[in-house]
Image (cartoon, rainbow, N blue to C red):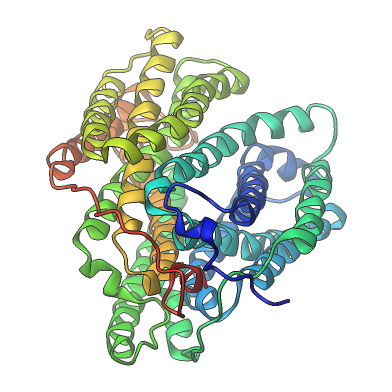
Length: 498
């Protein structure tokens, strides 16, 4: 269908977001909530799947690892896809893949088909997240982006927090298939509404897909994520399996680093003719590069804390899985509730008054967690997690808005793809770092997959040291100059959404 013109009077008003844009972004937000909620459903279900399918714990873990691997491979390619194709077909492709994977999961007769379902789901998920950011930064006026990114941050914060609770609730009444069955109506609704209401925005930019770049990105990003994930799992293996798991992790990391180096070289060559799969000229923009670096550290802290706090509460303090989930939930909900206000605050005053207290809160909370003991009151652990979540909320929305706003329109899609890729790699790195340090310093019985008080303190100490570097780093963050999007031409923000 023909793309609506971006040169309406409404779109020229920097204080106004056209109704068509609001509709597209609203549908993308709803779809993003569904796919992120689905991503976190599986973790709680691993023990149930081990019993139901008669598989080992290491095999069952592939249902999560394969999902992360697929995201790591798909997201970098979206930088090209979002320039080559328009909003509507990309949305329909993403939600069709996600819906197909969900249906396959609901009827899967065994582990192999279930693993395929997770891969197909992840392929759709990997497109949705960059598509959302690219659309926002291509269509929303610069003076309104903060509040819209605040809404995105709400989805990103609340959906993962609800996932384990929703999964636990479903599994308390039904078998694991219902984790997929309950997602089908939501995904089908998003697909149908999107097919009817999502419109094409701007014009696609012609380009050739560089097959060599794709082939290098698979072992590059996939090797890094797999190696980091395996390194984290090695910390939970029995003594006889640690050496084997560590060797596999280090081998994957080595392959990933070599392939990634070749991938970067290839992109630098292709950039000269604007043919890069993932254009690295984004990092030439200082505010984007600075924001991505700080976001990576913050994401490591987030994912590391999310995985370690429940393990500490259950293994060291002897609390139930439900209690450990409830300790995490308030912080995530607060982060989601505050994100829109933080976005509006960014639009009004810029990033400095937000990111500095955010970095301080993140660091103080991490140092507080480094002093946890088996007798620490549960409410105090919850309070420390709330402080961590508030710090992250003050960092994520301003940094992502400021960093992506620094990019020229033609690099919007590449910047969005880089953000998604960095978050996946940083998440895997955070989990690997925290679990590995906890295992190395814990002195736990190597035959037990548990953490100790000493190990958890050591892990959070390392995390706190890393988080401390965000305080001087945020002092270099400067507000990106506000500009009104050009309403015409292929280099307009509307065109850049592809």
